[in-house]
Length: 108
Length: 358
Image (cartoon, rainbow over all chains, first blue to last red; front, side, top):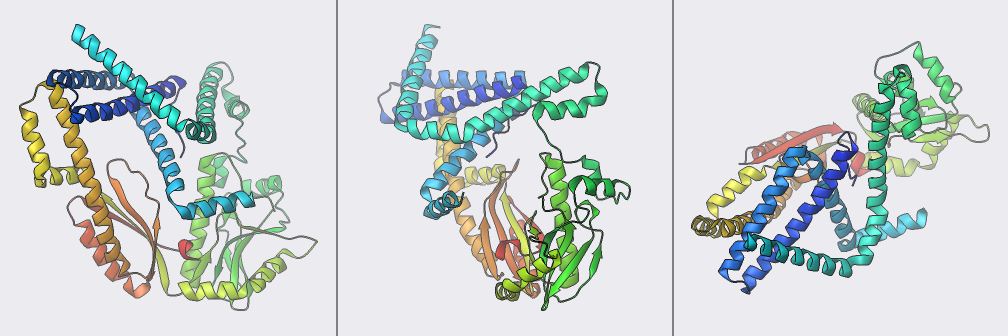
């Protein structure tokens, strides 16, 4: 679960964190765009514009990552967040874990 | 230009709405999560970064000799002792001083590596942590493999130091396994303390005595077995290519994509990627079931461990298996078959002491 963004200095770490968040927002955005397109509420022209905008956003993010040399740092933040999310889901979805948790809390 | 602007505004609004919606639904959960997990990690990461920068700045000045001290002060690292003294090299001169520092001279604790299936009393030599002398304390056909130490646990904030200790711990287990065939491994830093002036060796004996039934039973269970680690990986690239070749749905999407304008083509590309990913997950699940069964048939006991992330390949499963010695070859053949599958690879490690099954 460690959120290891130690890239040697603070700038890398913080920038990596920011871009990782932007990427996550981009992903959410993409999902929403698909929902609207598949829902049929958008005209072809609007779909095209939406796609182009997302494409631009993608390219901008890639450029920044390349420029700043933070591709690795961003991936680490995302991996860290994925691990946390997985852990939370596992904790909620897996009854065996509830007992273990209760036991641990009882012991500590 | 104006179109661009409008699209951007639309997206901006979309984002805001979506974020607000998600935030309001999961506010409490998020807050709890952030507080519990993210904050300490972030704080540690930032602290690390700051201390590194500070350290750099300081060492650039005139104090190169005291660099180590500075680092300790800044980051609060309490390395118990310098790394090089913990290495595998026997360091006759360094050792006594070290022991004194830890107060281990007349060590009233016993660091236990494992319980072995033998009543022998032997000295295994200076193979322990910090070159300690490792020997056995027998009781009724069992023996504990130990070295003398203080009652303080081995602790260090320096990961490398700890790694070194754990490796030595593992090495002692290997030696014990070689010599006694069957051992019940104990975790790193298992220290048996003596209280009230009782001879520490006697405390260990009492422990073996009190837990005798249980230990015997476990010993019977793992005798003749060896533990192996099996990790199966697949290469998402190869798997993706196979899927793209085989799936009609994806081929259809790709044909449609070719005739689209850039914006729509982008959306199609995402669609294809998503379809490939979903198909890959479906196949991975199926492979897991098939391969698990194939491996299960060859082993005495099996445990599914957490999968870990790897750089270019995805870990499909991570298993600990208890294998009868005469079955090891059959298992090897099964694994070789898996290794030869397109896009799959297998890592087979062991034999280990049976950590996962006792």
